[in-house]
Image 1 (tube, one colour):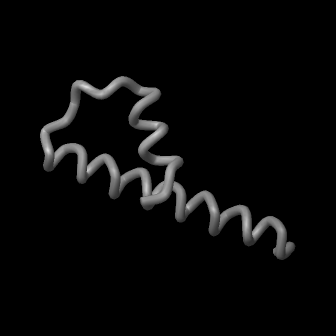
Image 2 (cartoon, helix red, strand yellow):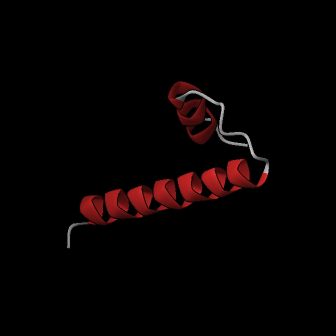
Image 3 (spheres, rainbow, N blue to C red):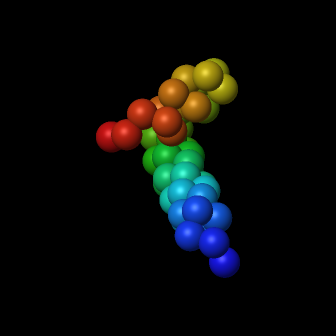
Length: 47
């Protein structure tokens, strides 16, 4: 497996894990009135 492909796979997996974590956090806070853009913004911006 090429190193660039491996790094890409790792990056995608990390992105998915972060997105799932953020969605679970939003679910716990019962904030489902956010728009899709706001959710994407929360996912893409670290912290």
